[in-house]
Image 1 (cartoon, rainbow, N blue to C red):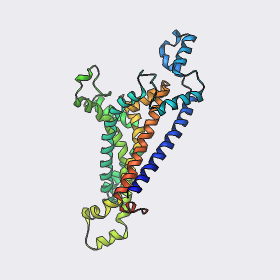
Image 2 (image 1 turned 60 degrees about the vertical axis):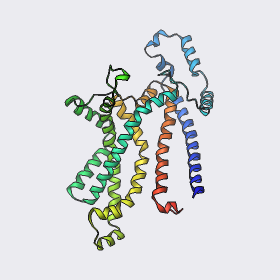
Image 3 (image 1 turned 120 degrees about the vertical axis):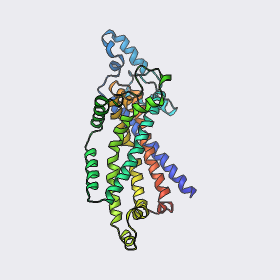
Image 4 (image 1 turned 30 degrees about the vertical axis):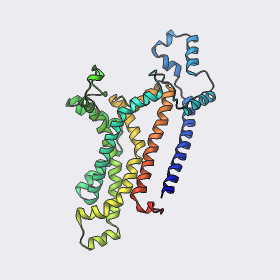
Length: 329
């Protein structure tokens, strides 16, 4: 048993290492082809006041005057020593910027991830139990509508309804404007997080609900469930005893595999609400040519998604006894 878990962990580490290497090479190559001039973006509105010598000094300071291959080798060597570089926008180490922004995004993504998973799973179970009724049609229509709706549009609609028209929630930002950091309360942070959280949750419900519905319908039409019905089992007890065990694995896998969609949705949601998280930092780094921060965020997002998929595989090993015994599901 221990050897199998050690082999599982070693394979995951090797896959992660190869993935990070590939992502680093491809990302650096794409950034080098970007039409955004990092020096011009760095100078900003003072472009006309900066001469050629100053531009050369700035390029030399940030290493932008070196050939792309040499820049990549220097960046990779620093990365191996745990140094992600310094952000050109924030004038801080990239690791500190990511840590500060992720602390804001973590609670936003975690709450929306949990909420969407619970509501999506329960909605899928209800739709399958009420198959072909008006309840099933309403849930299915709701899910298909959300799947085809952009995240930023949902965020704008929630912003217009609850902030502009009703005035119940703040328009944006992560904390009230003009308030000192030590005076910001937990209630203030929660009120500013509600709309971005609802935006991500509403979008994340659809795939979980549709997948759970179809899986449960397949289970309820299987032969062993028909045999259980013939023995007198029915209703919610039948679903809890024979259905949930079989639909739990696909639901767990899909929920943890949605880390990539969660991070991508957070980029759009945080941009709509000006929420100070990783999503907004990613957009700013891309538009303003902050190469160290952008590469650091790419590597961090890769690690974030890989951890989600790895947790899904780990839970598969624990929940499914066939995999624990070394068999194939």
